[in-house]
Length: 537
Image (cartoon, rainbow, N blue to C red; front, side):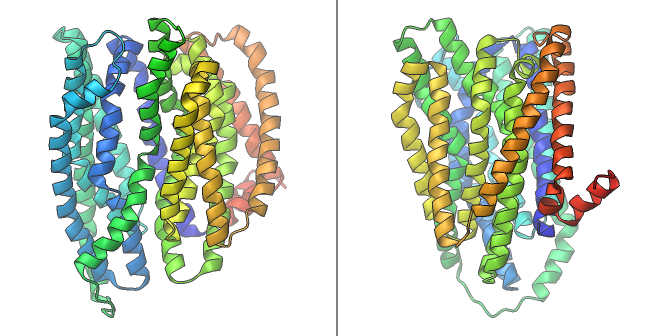
């Protein structure tokens, strides 16, 4: 695998993984402080519209600028990239302010559109939406700085800033909710409002880190300007015409999860009530699908997000230089490594759904069943992110939009009949089928426009699936007797159950991969060195 892509992906994966794990672990004390599922519904109530406004505020411009900086750097036209960045800063500040004002002002309307369960009032929903809207003032500029560094294939600042953002956000979130609930004896609504406001605090810390990196590296970046070829003259309006056309797919793809959640938020509760489920069951299902499961199944998606961020600038640079064989090698590596890691991870989550749900939330039959059912579909989400990134890298982003729209149409059409047939599982199935339609469409486009054959990838996926099947059988053989000793319904014993069974599965899968020399084929000399150090022939 290309060293830049592997190194960049590793750094971003590590940063994103730490950030995501922290974003899951905080749920345990957070649930204990606020009192379970019902307050979590209110917390999630503000985040779905916020994600959509955030997509509009950033307008996909940070990633689009990363793509174009990489493009012009490959042509040694460094000054164009710097001009893009400078004008982008002003644009992101303006966009953030406008979107903050819009979201804050429209909070009553946004709250009235959603179905707020759990006994909370419309005013409670408005407070939460307004509290989270402040983050829109900071995140667009922060995202632009991340995009700037990624355009130079420097993934470290993005990774570090993600971790710092998450640590500060969680510290503020847990500290403020604890003070409100247990020291000043305030209301749950106040606690949840401060919890959502933590997005602003975390973003501020992340911005400070990125500005420190920029100041530290400015001399080296300015040195590159002296090496500028100066042969290409592109006006700012022309540049931004290119960027806006390129940014639209980034906006839409970045909103994919939120758009799918929005369909659930507007329809799931109503359809479940229509088929006669009790209010308690409806609240429980909505919280599990929109909050609990999202946290867990996005762990494997971390790798896909990191690949996507590292992939776009590199594929763009190779594509601009007309290095088509290099593009094909990058695609082969990315798809194989992504599926090599996500297939066993997603199946593993499904196998250990009971103890996982207990550790992070609480023992729940409904939560276990829905997590087991949802876990395999996370493979499709990962594949969706990477196929979308590939299309953006080869400048065929218009098909990314079409692919997502086809998926959303599938989800919207199938949502009601599937929920009526299978209750909450129907919603998960509709989402999975939506992503499947998008992935199939985008794979066909990649095959046509990048002239890329998926034959080797398909053969390797068959092998990964076989290895995962063996791993699953062994994990279940270990799990069943152990679960009678270590209860999956108590947090501490469930944690050790995950540690033991997950460890056995991971070690077995890795050993099989080393024995078959898959590590050599996928990770090159690095994989070979690790295999030889372990003494595996």
